[in-house]
Length: 257
Image: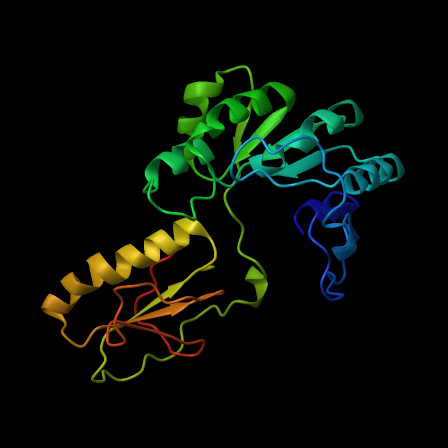
């Protein structure tokens, strides 16, 4: 939405498109690069490590045709998982930017190695270095991640701090609604995050198994609510410790960051 203030924008997705949702009132077109029938199509190279996206060759062909038709001033590639797209796009891009949600190598080292759902293997750092040598700029979400990235990619590549935006911020209320009266489940702690994303799962586990018991030492009726999708209960959680809902108001909302 912010980029559309400067000119036409095209969003290209490797995931098959579901529904016809489209931003209203702005010059943004949406392109689907793959279809469900192409899941077994030949792919672009071998997967280098856990976390890299499989890119079907028909998707790459459509992306190249889209770039030739759209003639963008800047191409933004979302995440190191799409590393295989950087080299093919390099000669076609006036400016090529890698948008990194996290420094994935640092995040992989923080997550317990025994977890089966680690998003990336610990060996992703060489891939991040190679990506930095291909692109013109890298976007990162926080100053801390910026410092972590600059420590191993060097000063040659500009690293821009671009904080995460808030979707539809103009629709958010300007004032808080009246707070409910204190009940037998005071306080309600509401955790909102996509529970299919490994770091969010890890944070939710820590919140339920380590933080909530300490809160209950002072506030015995404290209740934790997890709101997100998909949701699968984890071993060791009890029904009295947590629940899942879409509507329960929360007095405390720890963000999954």
